[in-house]
Length: 268
Image (tube, rainbow, N blue to C red; front, side, top):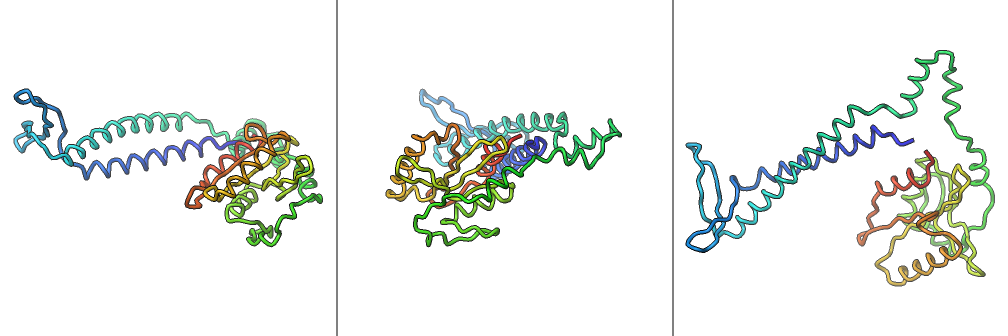
């Protein structure tokens, strides 16, 4: 089950951080505001400020950099206003939220129904993973392609080929997701090996492909051919294939990785 309170709190934290950054930038922008005025048939930018006597003062400027900074200030002011509306809405939603995590539900049930046994109730929440464990530990055909390239070891003893696969495997392990590494899928007489294969609790097979060296033309061409081959046997992104990527600098979005684990692999 998704911890809704935690997800909303994360959104709230991001919004507050964004608000802080906007306010910090606004503090370093010029005072006053910009407006366009006409003078003798010509249009000019005018900076409007408030003087020491409290009266508004207007000053024509031809400083392009100053105009740009004022326009940036105008934009940020509007963005801050919209952000504050979002903050108010999210904060109100947080207050109205009912705790839907397992611990809160168990406490409410035990309070309302004292005849329920705490240990039995907790045990009833745990899925039967015996089939998954049996599947994960059973022998399977692993890719025999260049085994010497599996030169990175996870914290639980699995050797993989890349930093990206290592990070993926560690996250799967953290979330308790059992998998098979590089299990062969035959497409006609040609073997292909998705990076990770999962058996979900609903007994549906899911596949995970992590793509790293997309800037490498040879790697990119190989991955394209691999995805076409897997699609021909029913393994495709819109149904049972999950794909993660690295950017041009080799960076991986771990939040995206966790999101896909929670929303594509884990049943709620």
